[in-house]
Length: 71
Image 1 (tube, rainbow, N blue to C red):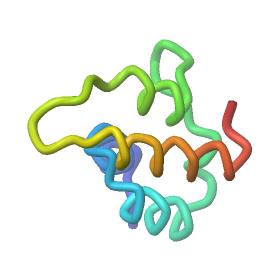
Image 2 (image 1 turned 90 degrees about the horizontal axis):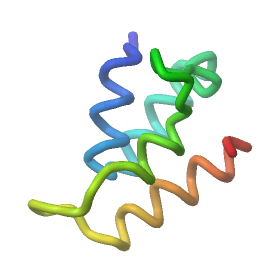
Image 3 (image 1 turned 60 degrees about the horizontal axis):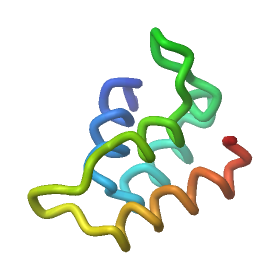
Image 4 (image 1 turned 45 degrees about the horizontal axis):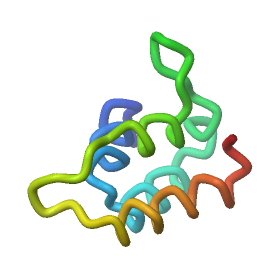
């Protein structure tokens, strides 16, 4: 079973393959929001690039989330 915390971790790591697999396994998490009302796309875009995180991976993750109709 996929937990919301795990998806948050994957999004912040820009692991677009992991995010896609997790949300496919538990589609109800697509509409999840955090305590501040942010979607997965908000979290992705708010995560700074840094250790081992590439802009390309960020774009792929964001593209995946936009494809799931998150705005």
